[in-house]
Image (cartoon, rainbow, N blue to C red; front, side):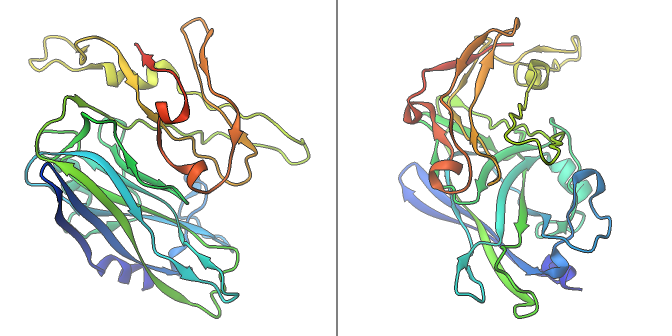
Length: 312
């Protein structure tokens, strides 16, 4: 009953002027945080009843833009809560704002904007990142002249907000059975198309299986080249060819990066290798965990990294 109540709570999308060419699009949702909202286990066993759950997720159809806009940055705003011991905590572990086709949104969110579902089915061609928040991260702005397209005729015709909640260790459901969380994004958008268009590409490793008692181990998550080929090639308009180049110059520039690890990780780094496995670039090892410096998206110059280009 509590989970169903969360589906009926409102969401908001409000536009406010920032300067002549940039506006703020406020995208947020209200979520009931309770023991009943914690139902997540490993992805292949999601929904299987267990004695103890500490996390859960939901997807809400948040908006269907009526005309094309270009996202040039975002700022997260996350609900703050107090544990019985007085600690100020967040119940949101991460937020993702996804874009999908209007058709896909209509098929899954049958009651329209505001509908909440527990599982959002899609593949890499039907769901695209628009904005992302991991616990503690700050605002992000694309480099000047760069933006991400949303609205009619783009890969992001409808916007879906994913809430992933994680119960803080200090939370006591016997003393605090439920609380209301309001979290979301402040999107910075433009009506005019910028000089260059961007896409946010993410990959995750769901095969990690670390046995206890091994001590410190290195876990390597790999995005093989074939997993990003859809960024370079797409189906032809007339169907004459299965795949045609999407890019005039044939290369993509890696402009920003965020490496997300949970607090059990000790450190993290990033590497690009060529088709022969030879290292092209490797970042310096950096601490893992939560917080603004560890979880925020950064443009490469701000990290002191060189310009990095990707090719098929």
